Length: 95
Image 1 (cartoon, helix red, strand yellow):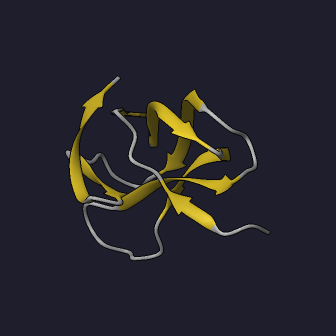
Image 2: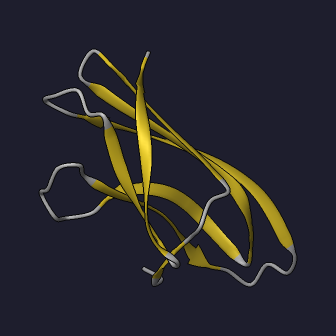
């Protein structure tokens, strides 16, 4: 398995509905594939997520949109997104 690279998406939204948190992220990256959203191991509130990918030989910048669904026992007001520039807070809306 290739090393995961933490990405910095341009847009991130988070919604909560019936015990499920849905995170959607989009941006543009060069030389990265298998882009996905993961939950970081720390069990803290608000939880920390990251958009990650794997280095690829592709040349050029490519747009991406990725969505992740996570089961949560409670409604959250926000989440934190780990990026290369540090953490950023993302508000959670109710769907």
